[in-house]
Amino acid sequence: MTDPQRPTPENLVARVRGVLPSLTPSAQIVARLILDDPATVARSTITELSAASGTSEATIVRTARVLGFSGYSQLRLALAAAAATGRGGTDRLVPGDLAPDDPLSDVIAKVTRAEAQAISDTAAQLSPEQLGEVVGAITGARRVDVYGVAASGLVAMDMAQKLLRIGLSAHAFTDAHLALTSAVLLKPGDVAVGVSCTGETPDVLEPMRQAGLAGATTVAITNNPRSALAEVCGHVLISAGRETTFRPGALASRISQLLIVDYVFVGVAQRTSEVSNGALHATRAAIGRFKADFRPRARRPS
Image (cartoon, rainbow, N blue to C red; front, side, top):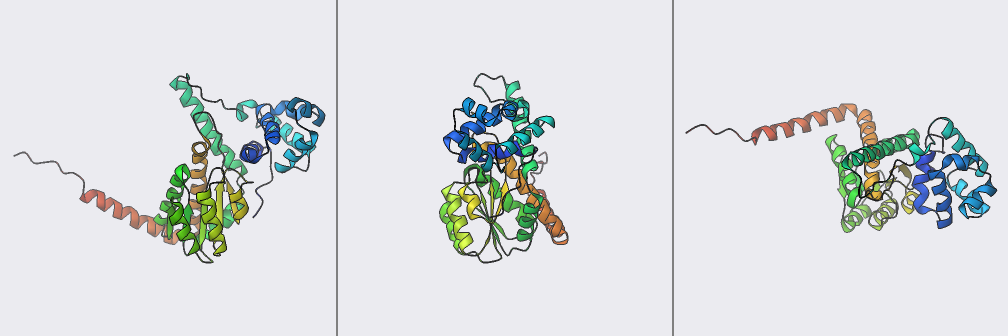
């Protein structure tokens, strides 16, 4: 598996959110302090942060390394740089959770802000090199199978539909039994894409394992770069989404997963522009004729 992009001030926040579910309970305390009050963490020595978090200095160092830094000093520098560029303030890190008594005007503002942030975080941490490798694999694939369930299943269907529109053989599977049936029949040169917010969904994880054993190129779209799904896949595209009380993880990540699908789709369409343009024109014309043929006609007066 190719390691995700090294953390920068632009993608540090997304990296912390992404690995949070996979951290140990003590490391999660450190990570939440980083998200809730990055300026204080940037100013704190490791001894001060240990006292404030109630965790050991060794836990803090391990957390920094999980985030991609060699130690706590480098993490502090990155947090300071994020604050200096306006990317580490609490407005960015904590967009505001939804409360049961929030007026709809606040619901609109908070959801909009969270969705916009998910898009921004995904763009900041996505590696163009990694994306290019995925686009290249899909462009030359005999077949593309996409696996996902629940909200991620909707993303899987969107990806398959988009690729189908430009002439690729693409199929989405939201049932584990059908996914496994498909996965074991894949061959080298085929591509399997697994979509899972947590990266731990068995219905996606096992078909992706089988697809890899069959020789297919494997791609993960997930929030968690340290998940089991990321470990079994040859390519990992990291999405970002902040979980809140009324927006659980799968829903929070959907917009960023769809963004990654659009990146892949446009990249493939660019590389196959002659074929994809023809396919888009043909499918658009077919749908247009269908709608015209079955459009209700006004009845003539008797």
